[in-house]
Length: 119
Image (cartoon, rainbow, N blue to C red):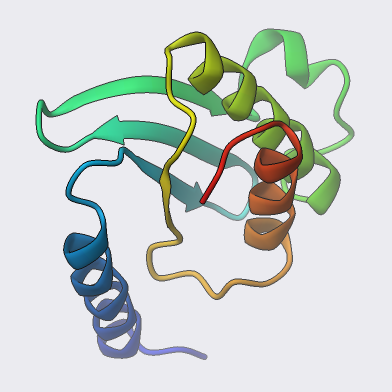
């Protein structure tokens, strides 16, 4: 089991690296729970969320078997890319938070790239 201290340290490392890169680009933040996955495009300068998507949305719940697999993450990635494009965002910085770049997080990032977002 991963300790809370190591998770907090990993999140801090990721956030420090993002701050040095993400001065002019919005941030694509990912949150993953045991049952669902969430994504937001955030403008940190203004403090606003530009686009968001999650596996809890009503139109996606019927299509998905579960919100906790790579298939659901791929759909969320495509959806967040579409909504970010509609909001006028082409380039983002990927914020994986304390999660390893593997499995659902990687599936979401790959689908967002295919959808037209540039990291």
